[in-house]
Image 1 (tube, one colour):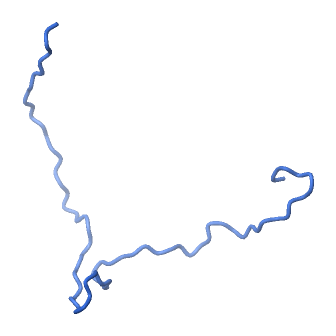
Image 2 (cartoon, helix red, strand yellow):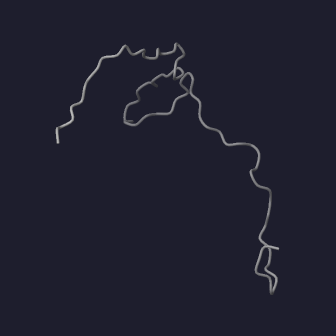
Image 3 (tube, helix red, strand yellow):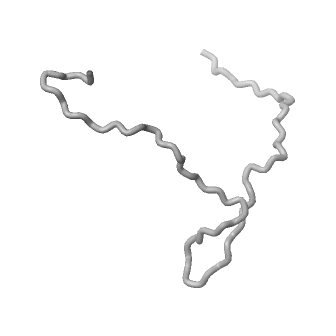
Length: 74
């Protein structure tokens, strides 16, 4: 059996162009403080943090005492 050979070809390929919209907002480094080696949280321009919602996902539904002879949720 003869070995298969791979034939290479060149093709004109159109690549996508990048957009002009910035991926990230403004970022800034805070001032250095002596004795601190970690990152200090600062209110840099464009700083946004996740915030929890103000509504509840579930209403109040306390557990109820099981009735004798009942095996389901009815």
